[in-house]
Length: 105
Image 1: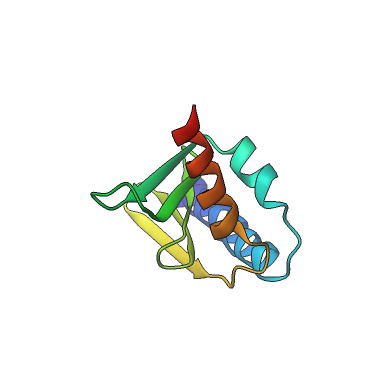
Image 2: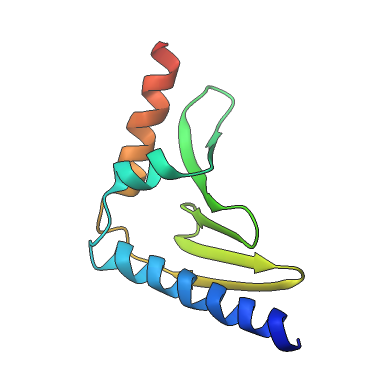
């Protein structure tokens, strides 16, 4: 990586680590994360039971929350970073409630 790409990856790395830390430390509101996300991809089984979700925070460079693996992941070009988190904000629970609410509409 050279110049601007390296700077962008350094920034991406910082943002990924900060988001994971904020979730672990309980500094984020799960509803705010969901409402400001670019997209939420719900993963369900064939009966429609919620299993987990990918929350797309940013598109390019991409940052998303992978609730199955409990990772915040980032990618720019072919460079990839992930940082684990502990769900101390009940993000998973809030996502499941949000998913169920979409079924009622």
